[in-house]
Image 1 (cartoon, helix red, strand yellow):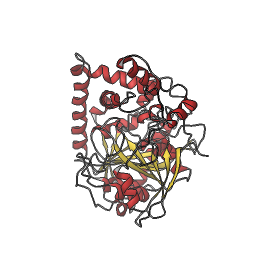
Image 2: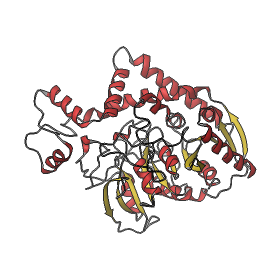
Image 3: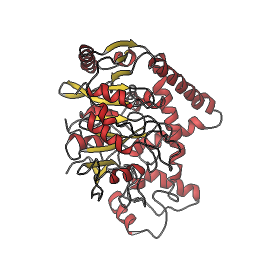
Image 4: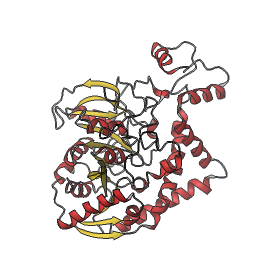
Length: 440
């Protein structure tokens, strides 16, 4: 059995629609009625939501069959799908290597042919990174294009649900199904709905101006940069106009991203205290929790006052990476440090957004390698958190600027997939889909 899934299902839709007969895998932080949604964490190991996320409702209305909930870094915190409570997922291209994260299970399921399509969530590149490492296509939509209702929040202001597929047209077709406003998510907008994204995957790049983000190419592994540059040269031969663009603000993107993401995480995950959500200290435990104790060790029966019980529930339920980010986020938001860290990170975010807007006034889309490195071997990147975070350098600026982006296979280096990333203006998904389709 593949290690891409945490829970296998076979939920067939009774509707007919554009996804009739398609097998769709769903990241395990998207709520599914009657099917456990763990977020890759011991804290939610037996949590079964009583409702479907909006994107799941739309999948069912489109006739899709949900085939399972896929593995992920715990609460979406990671770039390798190794921080999951349920163990790592391996890359179908090379099983000694990581699939990327945090939507690594979704990308691996598609790459292995165990799902026709998949949903992930992208907070700092969590759809595009595993798409690049596994050799499939992943789209991070414009913030507000896809409803986040039913997505277990990690960092609200950054994350979007996005599709993965073997082809650009397939990913765009899934985006057609899930895009559009939702009364239950006030951040969604009507702009971009009904844009027929799949029809943009026509492979015609003639006349498109592509701005190459030289800062992100220069920082990439030479083997990755070489494959990317060959793909850009191919697009130029087919009629695209290529320009080199430098963005000074990108040097500050990783720092700003992690301060903002960790700060939001420290707030969002406060509800997992064993009372409102998560493993509890109740003396009389339901059968499901007793089963969790047998498989996961001690997970309940906490004594003491509220502070003691909360602390023990969080100590037991969260993994090391989640604890690290909660602590750093709490520190950044604490009295006396808010202006020094959080406010400066927000200032940097505004600067990055302005830089992208200026660059996209000169080019239709911007391009860079999706990931600056080839997929590392399992366990190779976990000992140094800072180096682990720097792997996100090419993807996090897009989330800070609320823009759409796509990762498409650009070739291979040493037998491993290399992804190219195209970034467009807000609600410019058709532009990035068209450019990406030209590389297939």
